[in-house]
Image 1 (cartoon, rainbow, N blue to C red):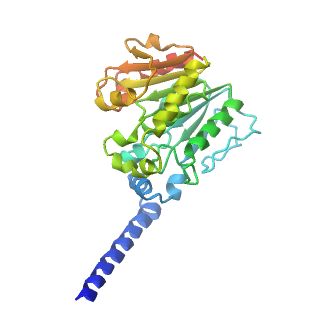
Image 2: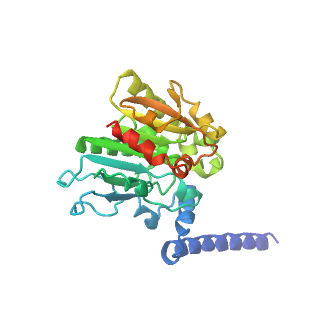
Image 3: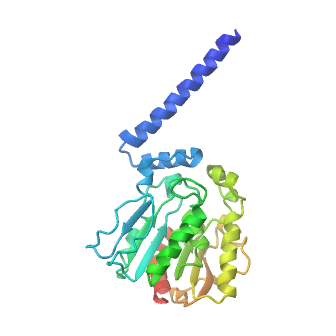
Length: 305
């Protein structure tokens, strides 16, 4: 009887494994459904499996000079080309949020917004296929913070202005690199992933790092910018009516809170500003865009450079 029971258990396990492998093969190589990215990113986040379909979108580099052929369209190893002679003065770096995980599939977050500004700037769109708050690098080792800070630092030496932008999970890395860029713009960053809804989806990150690892780095940057009187401009926009987001904000000390009332307030030439908006959800950029003021706010931030 025991042998039969073991045989049944082993058969079930083998069946589930084969089913899991079949699903992965289907999503990776057969399916054309747009939601395949969503499912693969969830699997990657929970298992640390590296998928080439997602990795090819880890970086998307768009030079303003269309004649530039110095960079591949996609690359899993992100390194700036020292010998590129087509470089603009300004580089936008976008850190995508967790949309891959929660249902979206945009690999060039903020691209449509950038197009509305005639800046002739190069753009670098980054994603985190493993949804690890960018704490994993492109080799899936847990050296993401050092990896992306080094990347931003390298680009800051090549460009006159480096501008970082991101929302939610992407905003977390924007904040962790804010002391390295001329201008950083973050919307509702997550500073402690352990207290967000569905935190279990980030269990690998929480298992690897202390739950306030991100918070510690962000607080260090804020203190550094303020104490050393640096020239960096750092804007963090928060949804004042969203309890989860305000709880994240209050984890930080030394905050310079500003009640948002008019876009003309946003033309600040140096320092750190926490803007409080009358929004009751986590999707603040979408709310500001719906109200027709997102681009005006960003333009005011850019005018300060």
